[in-house]
Image (tube, rainbow, N blue to C red; front, side):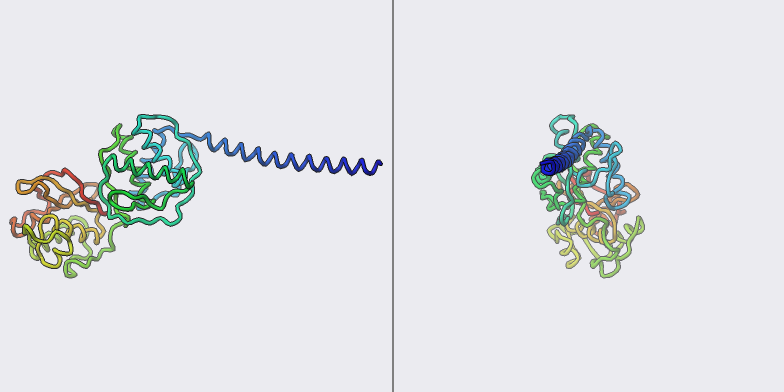
Length: 313
């Protein structure tokens, strides 16, 4: 009788210990979950982090592994969720705290855009799509569809960081945002255009060499080629074709370049190129350097920018 009572007591104590252990594990999980869910950031704090991520990307040509916000290391997938939530709330006029969520890494970031411009409506729609995907899957997307093609994961974070940095400095959302190509850092310094004479172009001297080559080998003609390949093949192009050709050569040589458009005396949709050098956009009009227009200096323009057509970086 005493033996049976002792065994029963031991079994009961064992069961109680096991139950307490399970309850303790469950309680710890609940507390951890509650602590994580209680981490929130103000829109201003997210915008400040966006500025730092933007600057890091432009300096190092890559994203940081994380960004620190209020002593917490926020991963890039988590930050993408903060950015898109911040943008959507800002557009709605909300300043509500933004919770930090656990967000998984994308599986295989890919994309197929050569860059370009998104309007405010377009980039907000992209942000909403991303947020919906994160909410549904718990992971950052590999890319997001847009009017200018698939924008890959890293480029999305940089682009939305630019947008929220703009809001931080200007107090409003931009009317449009320029999205870089998914290529990242420009070309390798060699191009298959220019008969082998346009490799290794650098800085202002490279622009001078390119202008001289265009003046000698190409010319402007209305109704001529409108694509880079057509200009290379025929030696003739309108302002659209010459700009596409020049942009490709410059990009292949590692320049950050964009094609812009504006109204001139002769055309309402004149196009030329701008090149980013030492933080400034330098005009390069491949039409005006041709023999047809007297070989003007490459930095002369005949129009003001009204639209950015594409950016290659």
